Amino acid sequence: MATSALTLNDGNKVPWIAFGTGTALFKQDAQNTVETAITNGFTHLDGAQMYGNEESLGAGIKASGMPRSALFVTTKLGPLQPGQTAKTALQVSLKKLGLEYVDLYLVHSPDQHAGHLKEVWKSMEECKREGLSKSIGVSNFEIKHVEEILEGAEFPPSVNQLEIHPYVWKSLQPVIALHKQHDIITSSYGGLSPIFRAPGGPLDPVIEKIRARLESTRGKPVSVGHVLNKWLEQHGVLVVTTSSKADRMREYLDTANVPQLTGEEIELIENAGAQRHQRFFWN
Image (cartoon, rainbow, N blue to C red; front, side, top):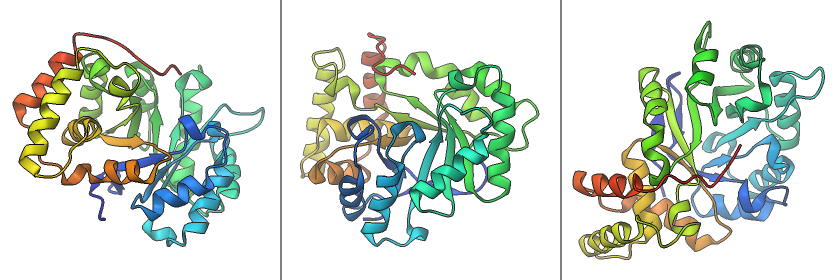
């Protein structure tokens, strides 16, 4: 199953949907789940030093038999140890992953590097220049953090990965506007949180009505997860999702085959989301 790609501001391409190894796989052996994800069509794998499972992510990649060139691998910089830099931390990650390079390296959280963001970003740029990571970016960055590293940067971040779903969409508009100004791809985690973590909210009846319309139009089953992932896809968002179930993995990848939401449906989702401001993850 071919996965459509987004073009980053450095010209590299990234599959629009990724399989994440955080949440349920946090500090767990991810090998079998990663291998299942690749077997079922995921080519973009999203890991992190803080997830504590880079070795098993690498083992899953190796066990899948998929050529390295066919995969897109992301990892993220965690808190630095004394004397460590973003570059030396990545070199440790590469050893754990069993890879010569990653495709995307993100600063996981600005709070872990308070007062040192510019210095950290310079080391991230070194990783890109030396080919240790094809592209570099950030995660959980607010406007002030993005602006801090943009000042004097050789390479702007290619991606900012944030908690994104309709219950935070309205509050994210200023940072998304900054992304557009600098051609930074907006990436999401926790995109399905409104339906799985907070059922019974104002979004539910809207999503169900749209789901039924899409299913009728398609003539094949459409899930509520399809609807929210489609909403993200149509906004050009890079989606990070996860599941331990093969059928759910295939469902997420199938989003690309679901009919487009109408402009009115997108507006209905965003208006319903604006009725509640709720985050589910804290960094």
